[in-house]
Image (cartoon, rainbow, N blue to C red):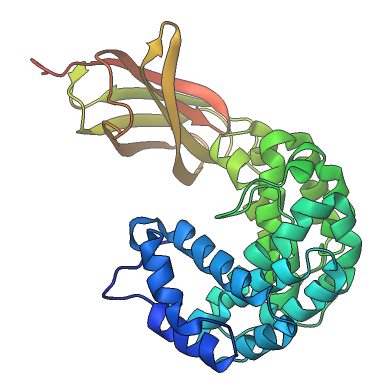
Length: 372
């Protein structure tokens, strides 16, 4: 949600439409909303900040009204999704002391035809209650998890994932993901890709802190699951471990121990400048039987603290080799300055992991001036 979307400017703002919709719903001072937001620095704020400002100002107006729920319900029926986007957050504020009623009002929005409204439902509608109530939210969402509409199921799972998008981490789920396991188990045989992706994202979050829990759960699904999305959830749910070259994950998906010889070199020589497009040549010989392998490579550069290099891993692809086969692989990657942290001159290297095991390394140096 919000990916690839910039903060509003006076030329593309939703504020005039917001005033019109709020006026039709009987919100007090509706036609002054834009002026108040602009005076409060709306166009200087970032995208999420703008969303927050609209939510707060609308609620300040609505909470003073006796029939605020009627006004929110009327706004929820507005034909433009850019307006409906704000309604889950209003219901969450309205129902801060009555979460079950608020969730009942949010549910239809979780099945909205517009993706922006779907995202708002989980992030600004359900997520605040997940923060407020802790694991008790799972009981309130139980009908959501079983709902016939996959969009509703997806919203419920996404709202309780440990590391949400555009929202704060859900600390109880980060620290004690075991609370989520019974819910995730109920999705083992999920057939719809929409909630399946949400389940996989939740499992991937868990794998960052408790990899054994995620491996055990998804490994068993691969053996026992019958759903159309079971394997997809397992692969997507373990993607961070797979990208890191975790041998347990690779073995789970059929990438076992190898008997290969790998010679690696850097075409550019032993010294390169920052922001160089590197090309590594890997000569691979399979000394064993036919096999498949996953390549992960890791670039190292000198860090600010002695003995602690900067490291970043990349997925290199999946390959198959016949017994005795020899092949050449080319790995291209750019070693570049980051806006927040420029590369430091000094020792660098590239590690090449085949099915999670370090199989080859190339040492080189980074030098800003006088590079080969």
